[in-house]
Length: 296
Image 1 (cartoon, one colour):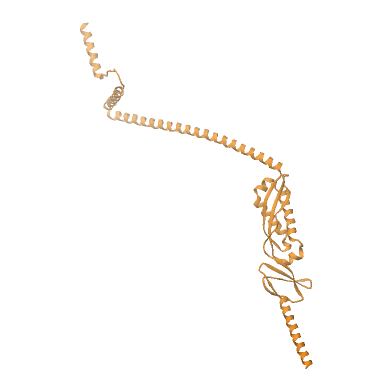
Image 2 (image 1 turned 180 degrees about the vertical axis):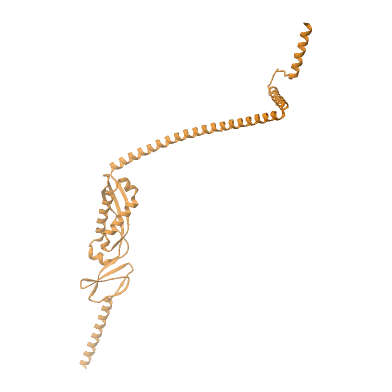
């Protein structure tokens, strides 16, 4: 009886141990990886696999998850570094870099401190790029400078399994003496532009006045030319009429001129002028001749 009881207890213990072993194997062999992570699996100290998001199976007791790496985009802390431009101006540049890990096996086995390494690379590239540019170019071509920095950083960190998603040049600070010199230069440039604008305004005013005088002279000349053409046309008409109608046309024109002259004289206020026809004057002349002839 005792032997049967011991055998039953021993078999139950074996089943329990086997069940626990199976549960442990399942727990150790099944790995659920979140969407934002990747797991680096080692087998006996060597790289075995990289587990992606979802359910993954590994060999219990032989494989183990050595590194859990987040693949979310990261931002390095804002860093400041000094740089000297091509025209020997000392500037202090503030930068920020965004990156994410694409190949965790390269990141964990090729670089120890990835953030510090990227910051060092960025500082060197920024100094090199600014050293090839003048201060005005740094200020005006900031987008181009950022593009060059990002391209070179991507090339430098490619062996680390990292993608640089964005690089920002947050600020370019100058020392106090350089700031004062630039302010003086800016004020001088503003004064020069004001003088140029004033001179151009005066020049434009003179040009407009000259254009107005020229236009007025052209209009007067055009009016005179039209008047001369009209007079020439009238003279031609009169000459043609005289040629066609003889003295009658000439007498008509003389009479017309007399009427116009009388009209102009009558328009004057207080005039004492007496107008006599030409035939009346001839009559008076004949009468005087007859009187003086009789007396003689």
